[in-house]
Image (tube, rainbow, N blue to C red; front, side, top):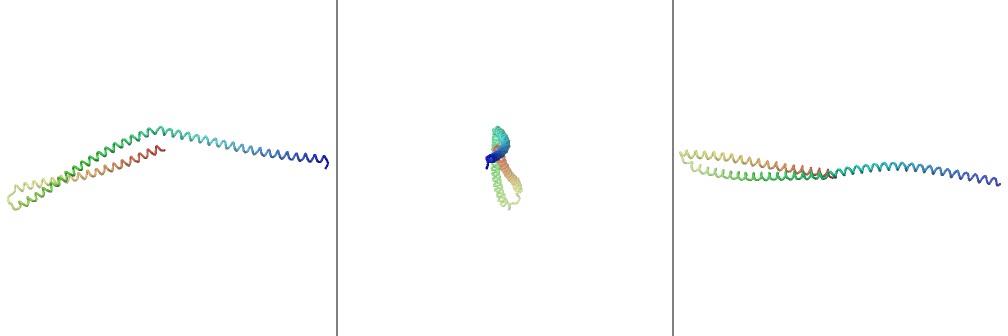
Length: 199
């Protein structure tokens, strides 16, 4: 090989090597630009999501702050409600106790009247049998008739007393039902208030 041919071959190889290096550098630069664009897009998305997260945090903090400020008022309302309910329940218990006392007294009076009526009827039967053989005792018969009328009135009064006792029993049952409904409503209201406080 001549010297000139050697130099041409060497220069051609060098030119090809430079071209390959330049192509590689261009491809690397293109990849770098694509990576930079991707990072820029990702950064923008991350910044948007961060701003949205901060906005949600601020909203939740404002909501929590408002709820904390309202809790003392809600607690005061709950305490007032419980106190009012306690007074109502105490009054209802007092009324129920009064009704029980009245029913007890009426029952005692009814038993006493029934016993008196039984004794009077027994005495009337005894006296009726004793005067069955006596004629001309019109005056005594008139007294017996009057006594029978009195016993009839006493029997009617006893029946009215028994009716009153039944009515008092029914009223006591109604009061007990109202008390149970009031307790149930109180529990539901307290639960609703607690749920509101927890939210």
